[in-house]
Length: 76
Picture 1 (spheres, rainbow, N blue to C red):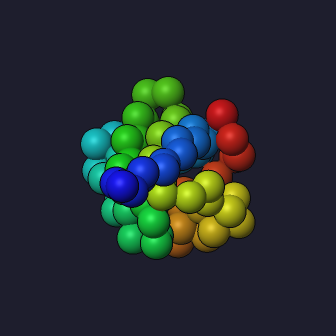
Picture 2: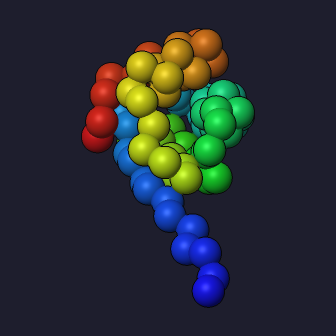
């Protein structure tokens, strides 16, 4: 009997990203969170897509985004 890997994806709106460096900074902050398996930040749209093993608490995501120097608006 094999195990099933569950994952969830959430999209967040982030203010302040304007370039590739911003995308990498936000991605690095979010990638450090426990359970995060993939992060795709898109500066032009101001959206960040986060894949994780379990749903992430928005306050935890906000802390990582704020710590990277940007502002989490909320779910997109």
